[in-house]
Image (tube, rainbow, N blue to C red; front, side, top):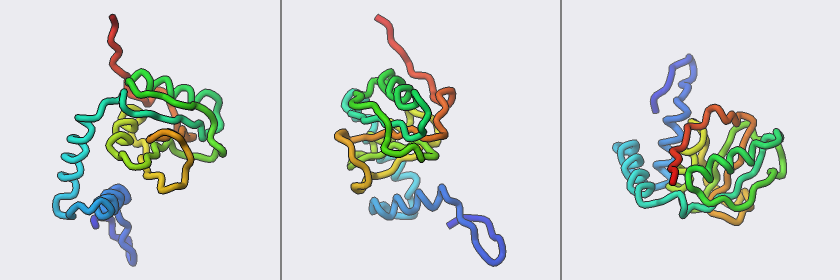
Length: 153
């Protein structure tokens, strides 16, 4: 694991560690972890269309309008939006995309949101009726969102 040596501890690269753990959980070999992960994600997301992804959006920041902004942005990208409302608590420091089983869909949703949006598997910790849950956090900043292409008729 690459990192920085600070005697007497090795401080690991958190992003590299997250990739390593994800590869381990998904059964990918370590030698070609980043290559196989990118290729697999590309193949899955190429076949997946935003209109096939149903999303629940919750505001976890406690700032009025964050959930509605996220829902509007995702809708512009072609995603199907289910319920939009407030999370049970407004303590989320970061915006997250939670998925039940379809990580490719979660990655596609995260790509439509601000860079660095975290993707996490639910494992039963969240209750929502769709495959994907987006919880806006205190880091939500609509100006960080990449522009969506809009077609006119």
